Image 1 (cartoon, rainbow, N blue to C red):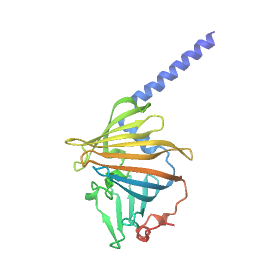
Image 2: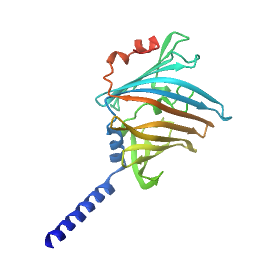
Image 3: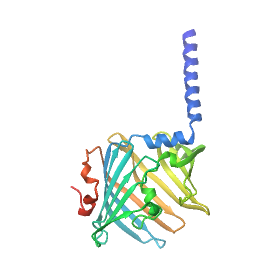
Length: 260
């Protein structure tokens, strides 16, 4: 009987410690969990970009995307496949974890047969007519923002942390972001973007399922309330850990308009 009582006490104690640890997580701790979760060493994605204007008219683009991690840095290349007016357009991004180092970005426009380097001052511009800015497309260093845990709540029957993230730089287009992080998979599932006037746009991340044992989002929906425009990203085919070659992530690669 004493052994049973001791066992019960131990279980209760462990539960209380785990619960206390969860309560003591800071906003920054949570965003570090999101940033450092396993998403594979590299990824190949076939995706659709659907642009929806205020009249409900849709434009659909087919895009092939590759991404590879280099320690805490990463490189991404995107090639537009369809329709004809954007075919061959290439985007290359080198994202650095170092706060003091600006990300490098290039855009290749086949009609001009020229690569344009995207300066840091253009990071708030919208990417290819979508509702994602260049900065939205990349991964921000956790310490570029000040994070505060606001509360815990359920979203779509999943327990989430709700974190407020305020950019430290003064020229950021967002005054703050409110992020819902699903606790079981450590993934952001909803983001509200605010400027000084209020809510600008809302990102919803859904259809989360495992690919090769890694939790992966298969759809993103950005509702730009300020512009009355929407963008849907559908990830139709995802391959992880493909041993992608380094020469794919170069300016010459996007100039070719296709990747082998």
